[in-house]
Image (cartoon, rainbow, N blue to C red; front, side):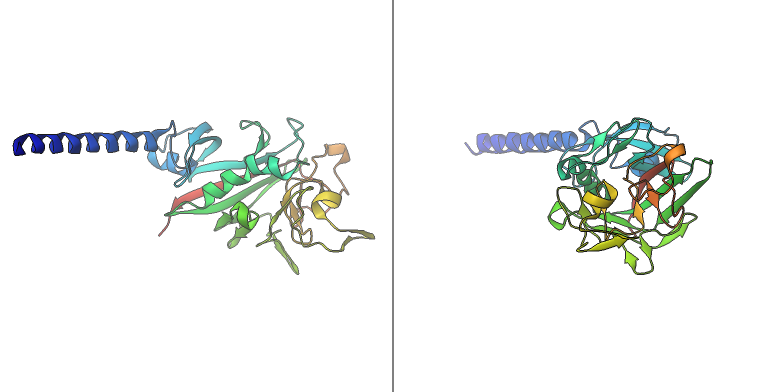
Length: 265
């Protein structure tokens, strides 16, 4: 009797270990090739740029991203705005939450995905912004840390120390967008009670001034989701692809935003 009981217990234990192993295998795979593009590059330095499936640590499901593989590591593309696909960025909160566009072209990855990417236990995030003009000039802004808060905190923006050639448009004089909440035309969180640009006053940066969703702080000097404008019509618009410390009156030819991840020290 005792021998039979021991055998039954042994079988149950073996079954338990097998079940745990299978669950772990499913949880680790889910067709994901890494936690993020940086992790994919860490595992294989010969990885090439393209579309990959990732599953950030703590995320429930995997999703596709475009990975830019550089000599210094892999970068996850979270925004590309260049007019190539004619993509409309003047959208509602629900669209910015889940993302829109074509992963291999012009797109916004999604605030939920950005939250998952930048809030992984044991991994730190940084932000790289790449900008280009119609004259062929290029510049970048790099932030040593980058975090997008949860929806319950309105996807609050947090950026670290700046370096680069395009300037720190998030923080210019009295204008500080670091710490700003995300705003769209149907969900106004920009703290703009009565903002003024030139002789024009308005009560919402997203709805009346920029025609896009972004981290506005009484509008500010940065908005890479503004309306894209062609070369012959890209000067003097308030609602444009704008990085004020790089070009003050021009709508840029393109903007790209990348997240780099690395193990926390």
